[in-house]
Image (cartoon, rainbow, N blue to C red; front, side):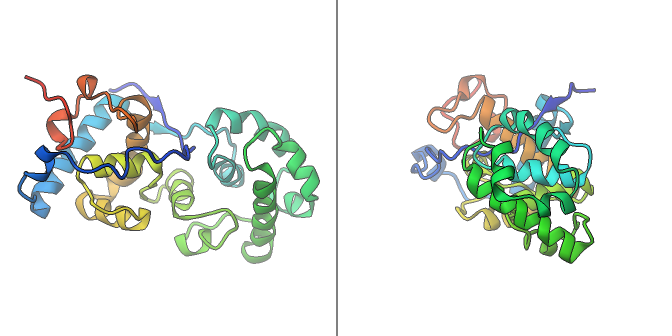
Length: 246
């Protein structure tokens, strides 16, 4: 059984490499049929599963509320940094009702070491108020309900649905966006359209783990500026690879 590897949800703001022109080799390839692309995506998914094993949430949490807060805080921030501030935050505000009553200054003081801490404090307070007012203090599972919460977009909602409720979802962050385009699994730039394209070629059971494994691979191997194709095990499946095994 493959060893477990941590996965992250923090999304660096850099988008270098995403808009680069396709190499001539890739442009000259005949367009894949949907069935061919689905078969290649299945091989990529299997390769990523062999490399990184089961995906575990790297954000420290004890319940769905804490997971929601941690994922909101992880925007443009590392998971390690979030895990340093959440124990103190949750000790003071253990549930949505307590967080909804907190002052913005008090919330901000708990997360001051994180980037955009003032904006995140506003999102957390408003989100907590919405949970209390509209959901009886519980984190909802429906995509429509989650994306109405302050600080929650589709990527965050898919993370919550996947880890809190076991609902399949594709979390399209910077890395997932970059790699899915390099692998020619999509030609789209918009995250929602990328999510739709990936959902068409992968079975729902693969969605959550596939996108999170792409995130890991983007951090460790397929870098934005200079992908390490010479040590990537997916090169035979990647039309954009600058190195092919003999």
